[in-house]
Image 1 (cartoon, rainbow, N blue to C red):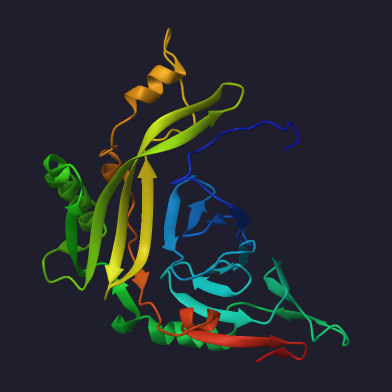
Image 2 (image 1 turned 30 degrees about the vertical axis):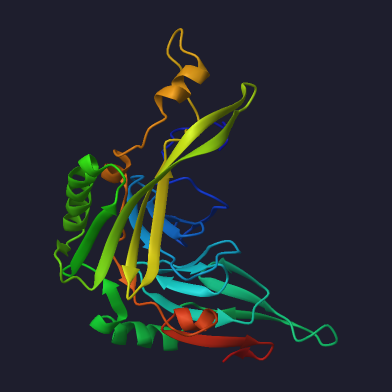
Amino acid sequence: MAQQDVLCSQATPAKLLLATLAFSPSGKRLACTTQGNAWIWNTATGSLEQTIPLTGLVITAPVEFPDETAILASRHYLIDVASQLKLWTYDGAEFSRSAGGWTFFGVTDGDKKPGSLIASRLPHPAAIDQLKKSQNDPSLWILKSGMTVKLNVAGINDASQRDKVQQSLTKSLRTNGCQVGPNGSVEVVAATEGPAEETVSFIARGTYKMQKYTARVKIVYQGQTVWETAGSNVPFGMFLKQGETIEGALREREKPDFTWFDRVELPKMIQKPSGGQGRGSQTVGQSKLTTAGLK
């Protein structure tokens, strides 16, 4: 920091939209949240430790790292890092900040009454107790190691590529400890879409038109999509060979990118979605923050 030098850089697992970052209290972990996922890195080695699906959560505020074992996503959702369990919802705070092992919530009580600054150690005792009870509860999960998953590649437009896509996704699922079979309770659905005309812009290089092809994978449980990710042949940036033009390079890319299915990272665990409404329905437990404290 004194020399203001970049010592190293590392690619992120996916394109990050509205990403926020937080170090754990020890500085040994770095968390990042976006719409869709949370990622946890080991800061000593740079290795990616966890990819946590944030299915069902609306992420509108920065991530916090209140404890070495858990992250607080979007001010409300406490997620256990090791199990990926969406453990607790803390509702009622306008703001939150974590520092020194404490999380501070700013709580209001209307514009005519004074608000409060509530300090709490997270996870709080009730959440810790619930986490212990949940460790061996199979009813909480629809996807985890040891389960059987059904695979559907009928949505791949090019029939000659379906076997290759099936092999790629089967390998990914087996790497995660899952089996592939017709009796799976969840279904991994692969599809390709396009072409559709896309406008591509490059700084100081102008705007171009190209045909966009999208590759998509989603996980479906009882007719409900519980996780989804997609990629396309549209580049975020380009390195041109000598004598190559942007127009020519884009024309070369105008085809479906079936190799994306080799690279896509499927979640290792997905918590059973709740049929309830509201933030608290997405987690095992819920507390209300008021000016009097945590209830």
